[in-house]
Structure formats: structure tokens, C-alpha cells
Length: 186
Length: 176
Image (cartoon, rainbow over all chains, first blue to last red; front, side, top):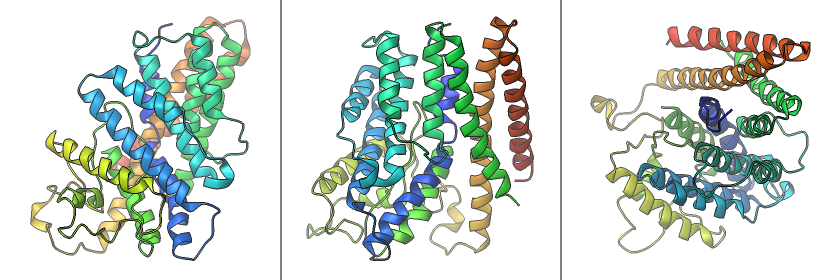
């Protein structure tokens, strides 16, 4: 099975709007905190992180528009190198931002295996690094995407049982997000 | 569209909370090749810095030092995107030229409900794509493991989820 099948593209776009709400909500706490209405530990760090990602994403958009895939990957790789603040400093929203950055980087690498090639093991290590060790995160599309990417990579290695488990994780998260939308509907 | 709506989500949810502190916030994840649209706050920056060089109201007063640098970069990128023909949405997530007749007029109260419905439908349909794509992957694996019922069961379950998401997407799309 080759890299960069349609699934990844779908996953990379899926639920991104929902993520906007998630991150918007999280950042609202930052705003409230700076208005002295709430007091997260380091709200400025989360704001800076969110803005950095926004800038990087736009830079990557431009590079891709120009066909500079290597540059886009390099940008995301530089972003990946961090530093990434801990969950205590930036709340869960910061972790989701990390998942977003890693997810886009890995998606790009999978879609363009000839650009600065990396082995599947390296890519799996990248996924593990992105996912980190935070547990009990609220359902969000970024984490779901990383799990699906992990499934893709495991499948590439012929580790189908593990791939199935990873896909199930992605499916469950997205199904949970869907349930929430439907429950919140009219 | 999805990015515009997402940015709208962030803009509508975040800006009220940040209004007092004046922190610019926009955190929309992106997809390769996705349409790029900008929040009004960013578009306002296209006009360049204030003549007197002072920060605008939304500039951070006591944020981390790198914020100003990021904002400058942000503005440069916005200008580049605008030059590439990328549309800039207003605070309600609509393209500025979506309805020129309403330009500058106060938006009717009902607009927010409409926008919320559209946002929700967009989220549902995006989830449908994600769920059905994973389902496709799972069922593809199941075809290679016909001797293992776990694969078939998971495939069946994922297809049911995909069907549910598809119906939800079609339902909300048709009611818009």
C-alpha cells in the first residue's frame, strides 16, 4: 500500500472547523484570564504558541502554493523542534496544537515521500513524539488524525493488528465528536 | 469554506474573551492546499502600522516579547496571501465581498443563528469525511484478513458510523 492515499487528505482536513471551536474555547480562557476573570498558569504562552502555529501554517500554505514542498516540510520540522510547553502551562489546548503541527508535518511527509525521505520507523517515532504521553485528552480531530496516521504507517510495515487498533482509536474519537455535534443539534 | 468557518469560530469565541486584554487570537489548523482566509483583525493590519508607530488596540500590552515579531510576520504573510487573491472574511466568517449590499451595515440578529447552523453542518460533514476515510481503511484491511472476525466486525461498525455521519451531513446540508 502506498503512502499518501486519499484517506490522509480527508483526515487532514476533517474536523478542523471543530478544532477551531476547541482552540477558540481554550483561548477564550486566556482572554478571560487576562481580563482577570480566570487564572490559567501561563496564558501568554498559549497565546504565543497559537499565534506561532497560525503564522507557520500560513507560511506553509504559501510555500505549498508555490510548490515548495521541501520548504513547507522544513518549516513544520522547525516548528516541531519546539520547544513545546507542558500541559500545565498551556492546558490541553496547547497539546492539541502540538498534535496539529505534528499531524500536518507527517501528512505532508506521507504525501511526498520523495522529499527529504524518512523511513517508516522514523515516521512512527515522529507520531509517538507528537502524541506524547498526555492521557485523557478531550476528543479532538488533531489527535484523531495522528492516530489514523499511525495506523497508516503501521499498515505500511505490515503490522495490521496494530494498524487496526490505531484506526479504531481514530474512529472512536471522530465518532465521539460526531455524537457531540448531533446531541448539540436542534 | 471550512477554514473561514473555523476562523469564525475562533474569532467569535475568542475575541469577546480577549477584548479587554486586547490579545489577538487566531488558531485555526490548516490543511495542505486548503483555501486560506483571514480574520478581519488580520485584514485590518494590511493597512500597515499606525502612523505614530503605536500599537493598535488589539496588540498585546504585556505578552511575550516574540508576539510583536510574530504579528509583523503575520501581517507580511497576510499581505502576500491577499496579493495571491485570498479572500479575507469578516468577523462573522463571511468573505468581505460575499454580500456587498450589506457592507458596513449592522448585521441582523438572525445572522448569528444562520452562521452557527452552517458551522455545525460544516463540522459534521468534515467528520463524515474523516470517519468514512478511516472506515475505508479498516474495511480494506478486513479484506486481507477474512479469517479474523475482529477485522470484519470493526469494518461493519465503522461502516455504520460512516453511514450515520453521511446521513447527518446530508440532513443538515439539505436544511440549509
